[in-house]
Length: 462
Image 1 (tube, rainbow, N blue to C red):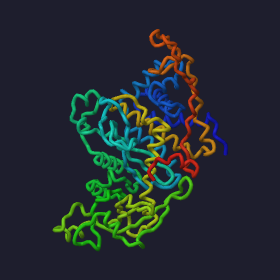
Image 2 (image 1 turned 45 degrees about the horizontal axis):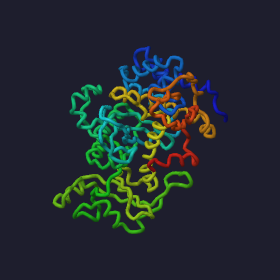
Image 3 (image 1 turned 60 degrees about the vertical axis):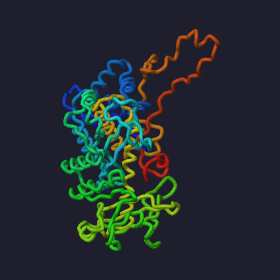
């Protein structure tokens, strides 16, 4: 099978974007929509507005810059309607791998300097793995074992931002947006997905969300099963601990050797990923005391406690609570717990391929519009992935690089021919060595998950 002609890819891309233009209102927005999405999918190191203007309209960069800036920063089209349209168009491609199996909730961070970008605060940033100045967005993806797609994206607005009228006004935060915790935002996204009649899946979440008792309870009340990461100090009731609840870490230490099994869940870069697991039927304790033990131990439904303890580790490493059927196989339970890696793949590709974290504006609308268009472009790549052989992906982009004017220089870039300064050069100091600007590397299309290319995503959660 050969790589499809570029004209064919461009025609399909034009049809896809035309579908999006049906839900953005004013017909005059169709051209900047097309250009913005083209800029996101074209080869290039930066996917902020000015470089994309230079790529999509090299003969009139300044005018294109203003057009794209207005479209993403000020134009009042609906993010929700565009994301809904993306879902409708991309879902058939995802379902070629099988029905939707999971709804994955998580968040992703965007490191930032200063204090004026909307929602920026000192908080935990997953991209950096530590507390730092950043923005954080809560997302929900639909997934199966072959593909996944974010369908909801909402900026988390910290409490100090939510209460600061001046900063809210300056950043254009809608009056309807009030402070919500990340689990509350995630719950709203789940409810919206149910209201939209999206094919149901098992809710997957890490301990940042799964350790929230209220969130787990609300998910169950919505009629959705979950596999939720929890912390080691979470307490549960078991059949052998009716006098008091026990921390899951202590429960793990108490299990006999025969309770542990080596289970593989998916193919890695060199071999199948596997680890040692145990599972126990438990009831969540919810901070119960001994005095309430008898009533509490019987009032809540049983669920699975899944524990991972790799043979080379001194202590157990991960814990999950799961409201999956009692007769589910051990292998399937582990498989669902580990399927959450797909949202890490979403984040990786959204940032590396289409510039999700390249937005340079400061306002609420621009932040969400840029993210929506990144997800829309990502959706097209997902749809195209099945049509392009993996052997062609590393060297071929969708479109040929656009020719920039010879004298084009991005704003803020150093002048390649600086005038000598008498004080700086009075001792005939050698001028800095500057490498010539190389043509941008062609952006790789999203790849089919293979043994060879999984090694390139080793930073993801497994």
